[in-house]
Length: 343
Length: 175
Image (cartoon, rainbow over all chains, first blue to last red):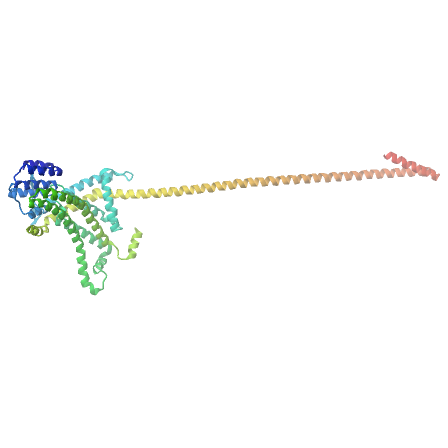
């Protein structure tokens, strides 16, 4: 394993592509070779929790034996939350278990990644915010502030203002925070040794519930209790209410449910695809497959994942803004016109 | 492979985890509150201020343009007014000069006429006076002639001679 560890540390794909034939010609025992190449591949693709899985595998059964757990188990291990933060091959960190009043609120891997994302967001925007606080309106933003301003202004104008309309300023802090928080969680999931907190359904559900509550509160504020109740009947005759009200209530919950599943499934699916592509070479025990299929395809999916990380953060924010906009929009055309004119 | 598929479905991918929900909520709310205070406030205020600043700069530029245009218009008006004024003054001056000239000419004419008239009158008077004097003198001479006639009224021829000579005398004397 030693020379492979060195290669892992360097972990450059091109080097690996050259190293595979070298390993073959060196006459490494065939049983060890797939494991080595496989574990090297893990890092070359820079898959998030890859290393942790390999470690578990090694610890449980011994990688030298060349046989492993079922690939499904390993993949699930990478995707799922755990109480161990592993840094294969350097070691692992046991995370504290906390149980308060019968509730298990342990600090898990995803909680740590979330905190990391939160810390990064706070550091970046703390710096940017202080720069803006010092600026007068005549100064132009520089460096990081300038870069972040483009994103903030994009969310402000193209997401919030165009979807919510008048009164969008109230919801702007939520939308901006949710965008950058999800973005950072997504991106950190792509960093080696990282894990995707937004690939956990609990996290996305919580965020979607925030959107749900904000939407309902905005709707209540915009229409009043009576208007809110009237919305549930969808303006139909009272005899239809027995059908309409349950449908409308279900409709309220489908929106956050869609948000939850969309983000969670998108973030999880990409990782599963990358891991599966890598495990093809494990299952087939073939270098040719590893070089020709696993590595190029997982790199392709990885690049796609970077795009998806941005896209899903944007979509979550966009849909939140859209739902708020729909909830606060006035039914009466005249009222809306008046609102626009007033604005 | 089949088993792995089953694991994917049943392996806790969708299992609830209250602890994670709790931490997500806490983390997110804290991040939201801190960022609202630290970042979004100043950034959005700055963006809005800048937008307002740009808008006001555009408005100011428009106002300045309008103002400049109105000043230009006013200047042109003033210039035109001044031109008209100058023209009017010149015209008036010309008219006045013309009037003055004609008046003076007229006055001179009148004066001359008056002088001529008075001269004529004086001449007439002088003539009348001269005629008066002449008449008196003629009367005197007639009286004197009559005296002489009466004095030498002996003979008609004589008388005739005397009168003739006297008239001759008179005419020679007059001339």
